[in-house]
Image (cartoon, rainbow, N blue to C red; front, top):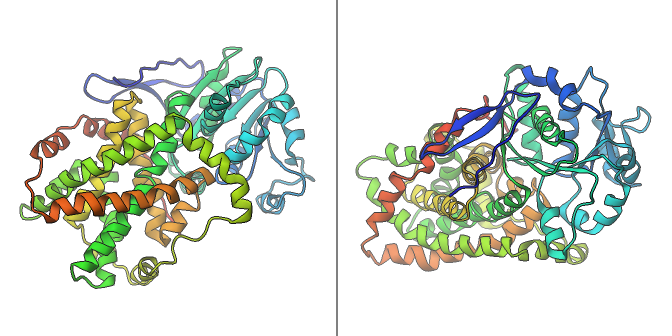
Length: 493
């Protein structure tokens, strides 16, 4: 059964979301109408230190500053001395001269709430000095459970005498900012976020976490734990959010060319179909709507692709979950640090496929992108396999829906639709970028070697998988989550 959590707030209205199958979860629905409650949520907080200027740092610093405008709460960015990001922060208004920019450890020491948004690898390296710099009573905020996973690996713990909370936007930093800006005149526009309370020393941790989430513009905030978050997040990045979608697109593109399609048509029927009509349909109407939209002559192709791809994808996803939950993926990210100094990650969109994609996108007519039933079957099967693995491990339904569906179609795939796979992957954290590069080839290989061979052999597919898909409990949960989705679609330039 999914993880059951309950919380109370002294500041924000708490709603109960019915996710079907007898499952309910409590949420806080965001919106700019709640900004007036932020001073109460942050009672006792006079300075929020935003540490780092990577994927999440700029977006969170700017969103918090804008949401807290007119209050007595200062948002101050902390960066390493001589950091190359000092100039970038200055362009956004965070400067030493106006008191909103300082040296990282100095900002940590003077802040009442510290949002640690430096890279995962830097957190693993610097956490002893960071913990030492925190003053008693501080609220330490994390936007990823990676540090908890690392502490578990090295048998360490957070210091006593501080609150430890997490607010984890279900999208990359640029999405967090872009939707917040788009929502200046549309209440509730933003990226959903999970929140977690790891340590609460004064009874204020929950409302501070919720205040942080509301200030970021989250349409709704749902509860999880830091351990559940880092497992689902790192797993999801390697799965359908980044690694799997990349591997699926590569495998389908080559398959379609081998079947006689032109290179342009192969790209349109693979990548364009995924990031266009498939993602948009799932975003607005849910996963099952893909199947429902297909004609009677197209459904058999979807079913064959789905039934053959689901077992292949499930096998890899089970392995990924094991690697994440055992700590191996976190160790892998940490070990990559020195190696990346010698050989940085290469570009992943310079192959013939992605070069072809540049031309296809340039001439794109949105309503002419095909909803290919074979592509839909492979993609949906992988998404459903990821959902099932998370369900098997007891993750909350909201977390499952966001990490496997909503983040993919509302935050990440629009970036690949706009400019290609590198623009999507490399706007994410180093942990995500490494994981995508590591696991994408596995999905490509597994699909071509196992799933597509089964289809080509014309073997009878397992019809029970199709029936299980049609009646899956996640459809009702996604429909409920869709009621509190971002109020505008993200616009990617």
